Amino acid sequence: MHHIRYIQHEEIDKKKWDMCIKNSENRLIYGYSWWLDDISPGWHALILNNYEAVMPLTWRKKYGIYYLYQPFCTAALGVFYKKNINVSVYDFLKTIPPIYKYWDIDMNERNELPADDIITRQRKNQVLDLNKPYSIVRERYSRLAGRKLNKAKQHELVVVKDMDASTIIDLYKQQYRHAHRNSSHDYTALANCCKHAVDRNMITTYTAQSPEGEIVSFYIVLHDGNFVYSLLGGSTPEGKTSGSFYFLTDAAIRDNCNTGKTFRFEGSDNEGIAFFNSQFGAVSITYLHIQQNNLPFPLRLFKK
Image (cartoon, rainbow, N blue to C red):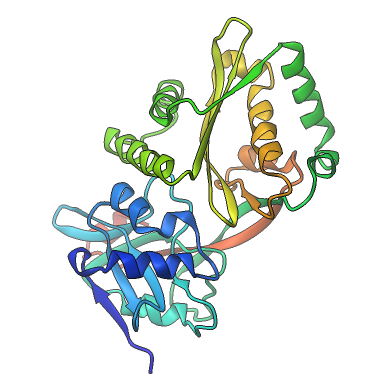
């Protein structure tokens, strides 16, 4: 008998939760309790039986109304399930308590939803198989990527690894403060996630530096047994003219070839980002974005 129950944060058995994620067919690093605790403090959960399948509920409260949201730098969550467990994603979603009046969440790519009474749209991600030698992966780069890498070489850029992630997050905030509306809390939460990833040897940072030691590009990459995750990165204006982020992406790919892992580029709904990713031979996959609006009138008119 399948029984899905809703439990609040303090009732979650974190050891059982993390064991479920670890043994899940569709595990992602974002599903572990240590990531969720920092990126969405106080998260609640749906749990099938004795942690055979789980779904984190990342929530916030505004104007007295509870809603579900997708946390910063957390590409997908949804239902995670152990091997040989028959899971109905629909049943999980129908178990979400009505106190959450608005949903705006991303499921993982293994979550299918045949029912049509829940509003969904398909989002895109791009992935690259790294279970082959770098020489073979490199052959599938586009000519544009090759030119950008040559340009980085001409600028004599060098890769420097393992800079503190908080420094890279600060560089990102500085370079993209006008383009993004993330709060200071979001960045602090991400920095804490990265500290825990360091403790677990699940993170690598990269910077591209000029011969004078100036940082022109920066990148944070996560990794677990299955995937390499593109988490956060960018370039200075000088870096954009020297192919520096192509240079760092190539370095991250090179480091993880022949590992049996898959590179998750994340964030590929943006056409410019998707174009960049495709230059490395990445292929597209889809996952579900779910939006449900049960806000009281007239609020529901303003939130679509």
